[in-house]
Image (cartoon, rainbow, N blue to C red; front, side):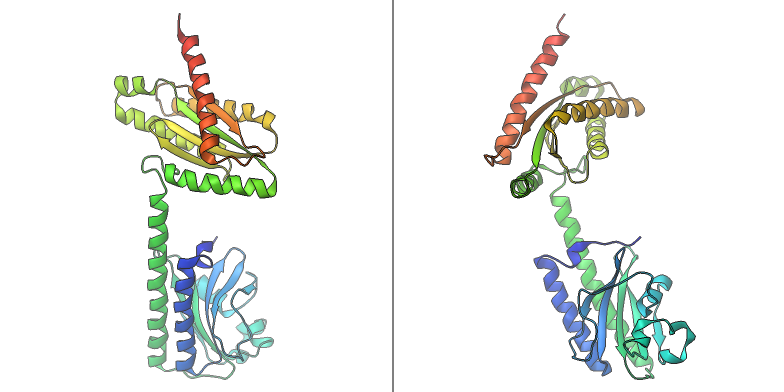
Length: 325
């Protein structure tokens, strides 16, 4: 329903932005002489307070989440995607079940939607008061200008995250590149050691890929590579790490509960790949897939990859021998 990008709330880069947002919200409440101001994000879990002004009278703190079905002012702003000004809430039947009015005693609300760069609503930028208000046009312009500063900052963060993701992705297949694989796979192995689960590394190579390029051209070869990436993404779990080392060499790092099941996983990948190729009217190809398993010795990803590579080589040699007349 909503974008729930958690990088907004964690990490060094976002903390810099949150400090700027905090100053903006505090400045807004000071200029409005109001007891409470907020940046709120709409998420699937509810309306999360990202930043709250730091006055003692403010009953809400950063990190609190209001359930989606609660009738609050910010919900109305997000649903309508437009500004909302309520100057005397207790006199308006619409807010008779709003806990911000009935429990916290707020009488006034002025809020605007904050947007992601693509135009989707991120949440709200708002100021609230326990007293009835009569904000004039210059106040409305002021909060709009302050909201725009938050939107500009959100766009910068979003651009930075996209650039960082692009730097970790293979440009052809849009799965992780070798640099990202090294980083993420080592993190997965460290986590497996702490939590006690097993990890299997699959080294995947397309048989006769050079012949495919020579006979059909590199465009068909690229389609075969993209199809393999799609197959791996479709038939492995989100928690598994999938990447391309280069050429026709792919890697999948899989969290497993039973090592005996890995042969079934490999067969499923091979069969699904051939079905995808046939569906796209591409030449039939086979795969050589080697495997290796993590152990209590806490080996590095490079060691695990090397073992899987050697196993893949044995599988490929058997494939070549089977082809000979």
